Length: 297
Ligand SMILES: NC(=O)c1ccc[n+]([C@@H]2O[C@H](COP(=O)([O-])OP(=O)(O)OC[C@H]3O[C@@H](n4cnc5c(N)ncnc54)[C@H](OP(=O)(O)O)[C@@H]3O)[C@@H](O)[C@H]2O)c1
Image: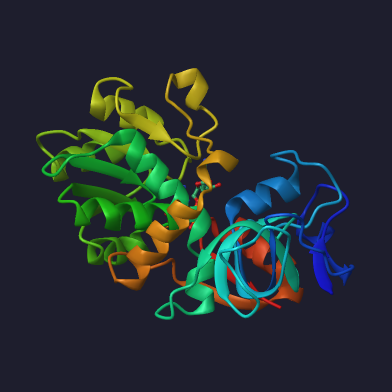
């Protein structure tokens, strides 16, 4: 099968397209013929070496595809099923193994379904940590991003008032999600105070880029401030929500897929590139600082 991998850390060019044996599903696993594989910032960090992982590796933490083999003990999926999940051993490939998966609703196409697990799980986890209530005001730094936009939609649907930050060009997109919007960057705290004169009750930093001091100033401390992206979290005393395999459950997938299929959330709008252009997808994400790409084998 065709697969994208890297044997060293470095720039996007360390990603090479090659051949590998089609993997065999172990107990409890399904093998899918990948229809779409999401590209995430974490893939870029793991490729560059900003985050370390054993090499060689196949990047990719979310896929949608058609089950074409099942391992021992699998009772909830059959050959031919359309599923979405977190791959074991990488997703940028023609075939991937999944231990945790859920049925893809017909209402979602392959690209939309593949774009959902990583960002959606992080959004759910962050909202669970902050527990914003109806009527409270939540500041989301990076509300235009994949995680931020899902968190914005879920919070707005629960009656939370959301103030979201974005690049100037993306402010209208954030407003369309039901949030008030303001540009990120210098002077953020003052702009948020103008939009939320009674203050903000919680802050989700879904982008990083140094917004935490403003978030702390707005909250008058670190209570109910969390980040999923800023490595300065520790020194500022802000919880960094890293997430882990224990968070990646089939229930979470079903929650996200149901929310998307019912229209409660819109999955990240994704550009589609062929698998062979994985390096370009990484280079663009690094150059642009945001944007969802889904690779299609
Ligand atoms: N800890 C975890 O569990 C976890 C899970 C998922 C993601 N993450 C991390 O969360 C971050 C966002 O992920 P994502 O998938 O949502 O990425 P994304 O879709 O690429 O979105 C990136 C967001 O960052 C914003 N941004 C770009 N430059 C900025 C700046 N200078 N100041 C403030 N905001 C800026 C973008 O706004 P514009 O597009 O409007 O410029 C956009 O809202 C990444 O760092 C990712 O690694 C962490």
